[in-house]
Length: 299
Image (tube, rainbow, N blue to C red; front, side, top):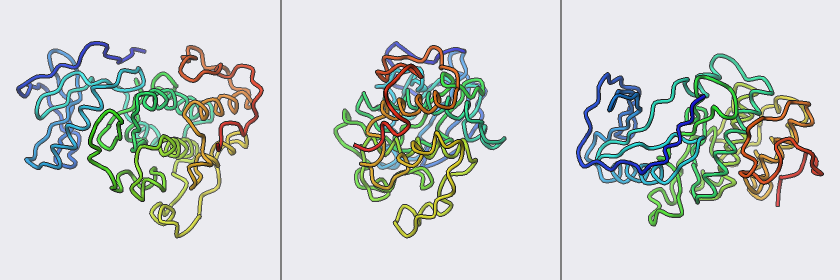
C-alpha cells in the first residue's frame, strides 16, 4: 500500500494549471471538485469559481492549513494557484461509500478508527482541529478497511493555531450528525470536539447510522434519544464517554482515546496492529498495560 506523504514544499504557482481528463465530482460553496490528470499523475483538484470575498477567504484558509501538514494519514497538498488546490487522487473511495455497502465488523471498525486517531493525534500536535470529521471526509486507500489505509481530507472548516484569523469564529460550522454540541454553539479549537466526531464515526461504522436520528434536536438539548450502543460491550465505555455532551467527560486527548481503543481490542482478543507508529501515542498498541476498559475518559 503506497503512502501519500509529500515531504517537499508545496508548489505555489502563479497561474491556473492545465488539467486533462477532467471529471467533475461536486460543487459546494463556490468551489468545484474534480478528478483530473496533471503533470502526468492522477489528482484531485478544488477550483474556486466565484468572485466572493468570503468564499475566497475560506478557500485560502483550507490551502494554508493543508500546506502545513505532512502525515501518511492525511492527503497532502501538492500545489496551489490563486484558484486551485491540487492533491494526489486516492483510489478506493470514501468511508461513506464503504458503509453504504454494509457495516464494518468489529476488527475492521476498530482498525479504521485506530488509523483515524493516529492522524487526528498528529493534527492536534500541530495545533489543528479538523471540525468536520465524517465518513465523506475519510478516504480508504485501495478500499481497504485497515488502519494504514485511512486518509483524512477537507480542511475547509478547520481551526488552526498558526492561522492568525479564524474565519469561522463563532459560526455553527460542521455536519449535524457528526458535530459536537459545543461546535453547534460556535465554540472552536477544542480537540475534544474532534474526539466526539471520532466516537460518532465508530458508532456509524458498527451500526450503519449515527447515534442520533434527530441530530439537531440533540445538539440543541431538546432530547437525549440516542440509539442503542452497537458492537460488543468492551467498546461501550469508549462510545459512551466519546459521545458525552460534556467535553470534560470525553477522552482528554487523541492519545488517551487511542490507548482506550487498543485496550478494548486487546479485551476482545483481536490481534495487534503491526506497524502502528508507537511514538505517536506513547503506549504500546495492544501491549500489556495496567489500565482498564474505562481508562482515557474524562479528566
